[in-house]
Image 1 (cartoon, rainbow, N blue to C red):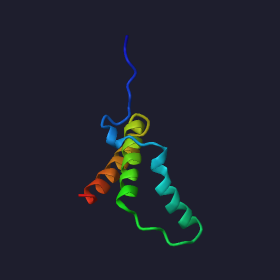
Image 2: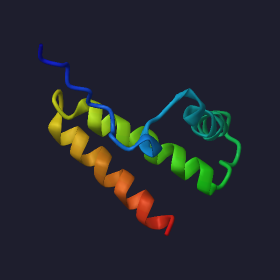
Image 3: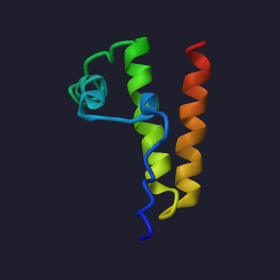
Image 4: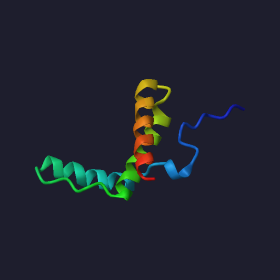
Length: 82
């Protein structure tokens, strides 16, 4: 029996979960309310990397160009953590 393709990133370090949205929500709320946005810390960057990587993996079939752009941004952020 054929198995369904799981488009999630193979490496669990790059799988997103709802906790990854918290630092992004804090930054979005600050921007919305006209407050200074907190500087992105390494944990926020890692959360965004996981979200972008998973979005790229899951969206590749539906929109390859958007998936490529999301993966490129994730790679740029990942390079900045080194």
